[in-house]
Image 1 (spheres, rainbow, N blue to C red):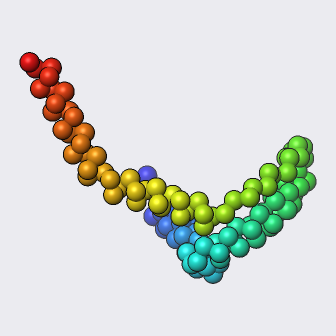
Image 2 (cartoon, rainbow, N blue to C red):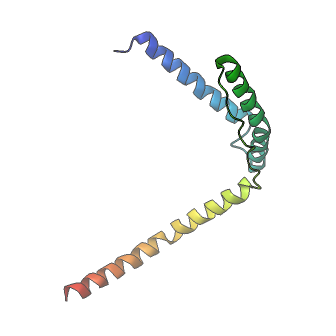
Length: 118
């Protein structure tokens, strides 16, 4: 049985994390124009690796563990706008032809069954 105090603490921690994520998304304008999202991704690529290195050094100092140095992350020439648009176009294209393809496949299925029954 979980105590009510622990349940309340879990709820507050989860709520704080969720609130922090919502604030971060709003503050960085990640749901805005795609060029803003691209800029945020570039900022993250610049900030995250040094922060991870500093954290790993801190863990090594505190625990006495030796963590091997990770190789540098590969550089990608990746444009979110282009891939997002192509993905949306592919999905919308598939959805637009779905009814006619379903009708076509149904007719083919009935023809196949009629031939097999004869």
